[in-house]
Length: 378
Ligand code: CAA
Image 1 (cartoon, helix red, strand yellow):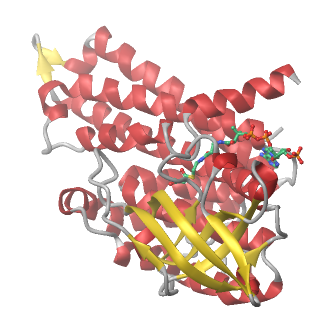
Image 2 (cartoon, rainbow, N blue to C red; image 1 turned 120 degrees about the vertical axis):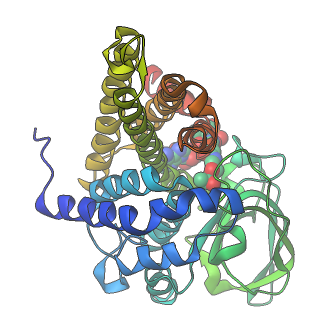
C-alpha cells in the first residue's frame, strides 16, 4: 500500500493550488457578500482541465483520475467553497454522461462541459417533498410521439440557473425506484425554467434554485440510459459525488485550521502568544489529527473508484466523517479566533457558514449512516 501521490496527481494539486491562490481565494469574500456567480473563475478552472478532471481526453477532460479530482477539490474548496460546489456538480454531471451516455450524448455535451462553454452542469434529483428518498419522486415523463414530455418541480438544484445541461430524473413507469428514468435537458428548452435563487446561510456565491418543468418536451435521444434505469444511475453518480463533497468539506476545514494556526501565533494573551497555551494547542492538535483522517478517507475512496473497485460504502464513510469533522474544525477555529472569528474581517465565519451544508447535501449524514449500516448488517 502506498500513500504517495503520483507525479500527475501532484501536478493537478499544484495547478489547482496556484490558480486558487492567484484568482479564486482573492475573490471569495466579495463573492460571498455579493451573492453573484463565479462565471470567470469557472472558465479559468475549465481551461486548467478542472471541470472534467476524471473525463477522458477525447471529450476534453484532463483524464487525471478520481484521486487527482479529490485533491483539486480540496484546494478549490479551501479558497472558495461556493466555486468548489459549482465545480463538483459539473464534474459529477460530466462523469455521469461519460459513464451512462451513448456516443452521441457524450460528443454533444462533454466538450461543452469540460471547456466551460456550458459554464456548469446541474443534477436535478431532489424535489420540494423528496430529498432523502428519491425513489418517491413525482416529476413525470410521458412519451409523446418520438419524444418525452416532462412535468414537475425540482428543488435545491445547484448551478440550476447557469447550467448548459441538466440531468433530470422523472417517473416513466410505476411507483418506486424501478419507475424512474433520467433525461438530459438543455438550457433554453421550452417549458424548462429556473425559479428564484435561495437566500442561503452559506455558499452564497453558489446558485441554488428550484426548476420548473411544464410541458417540457425533449427528444428520445435525451434519455440517459435505459428506461427504468434512472434510480441506479443516480445512486452510482452520488457515490462519486460524495467523494467530491467529502473533499470539499476537508478543503474548507484545512483552510479554517490554517487561519487558526496563523492567528494563534500572532495573538498574545497573558504575556505570550495564545499558541503557547495548551488549551489552544489541544484545539489545533485535534483539528490536525481529525483533518488528516478525513483527507485520507476521501483519498482512499477515490483510489478505490479509480481502481474500478466498489467504493460506495467508502465514499459514504468519507463523506460522513469529513463533513462532520470539518464542521467541528471550523467551530474550533472560530473559538481560537474568539470575537475576530465571528466578524467578516476574517474568513472563519464564512468557512463555518459554508461548511455546514456538507452534512446535508449529496445525502445527509443520516443517509450516509444508513448506507454504511446496511453494508455492516448484510
Ligand atoms: N449503486 C448502484 N445501485 C444501487 C446503489 C448504488 N450505490 N444503491 C442502491 N442501488 C440499487 C439497489 O441495488 C436496488 O436495485 P435492485 O432493486 O435491482 O436490487 C435499487 O437501487 C434500489 O435500492 P434501495 O432499495 O437500496 O433504495 P432505497 O430507496 O432504500 O434508497 C438510499 C437507498 C441510499 C437511502 C438512497 O435513497 C439515497 O442515497 N438517498 C439520498 C439521496 C441523495 O443523496 N440526494 C442528494 C441530492 S443531490 C445533491 O445534493 C447535489 C448537490 O446539490 C451538491
